[in-house]
Image 1: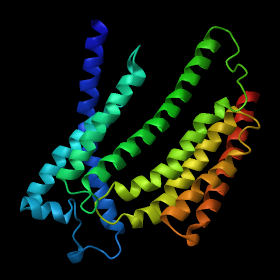
Image 2 (image 1 turned 60 degrees about the horizontal axis):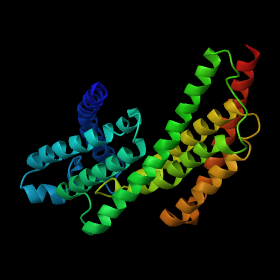
Image 3 (image 1 turned 120 degrees about the vertical axis):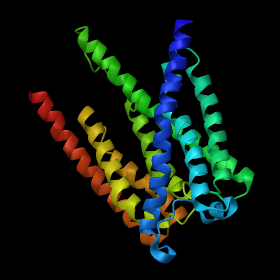
Length: 281
């Protein structure tokens, strides 16, 4: 009973904390998109709601308030994504329930806010559900890495070897899932996350900021843990971005492959140096 009360309290706490984040992130998406939009919005004004939504509600102010409410609810739903991991039993079941509930909130938010005016209702539902499922796969991979770190810390505290020998390739699987999420899921999400034209961000922010940052950090983390297993990871990062290049862009975007490879290699070398410095301490 006490555990149920604690979980419920944590659920409301995270939902309350996620509400303002949802509002802020949605409006940040609109402001950032308009700042990079080509051509620029007429009159030089930054739009914070879709034009269709402003027309449906009769006033941009009313539309903005309604979008703020729904964006907050979406943020609250996403903010509680970690709660199933706090349960001692039924984590997988409640994670599935959370995916369906969040997909429902996302669908209702997009419908009320006119985020997907050119996509049919059921296509929108399946698209949102697919993205959330892929997102959960990535989140489980991250959680797995966290569990591994906790296990190593407990073994170290008990005076045991903190890094027991793992089956070949097992420790790399979470990194492969992360690469799939960052290089295949994230670019698609950039397109469908906004009701307006998001190609400017997908063509500028993603290849020049998001992609190199992810490749560098993930390879650095892998190389800092293992001496040789990271060597093939830059090739994986290069291969993962290829479907995105040909599905979303064209052959002119093949330089994304080079960006992924170079930054991943740089991250691997950095991680190797950090591992050796840590070993020498």
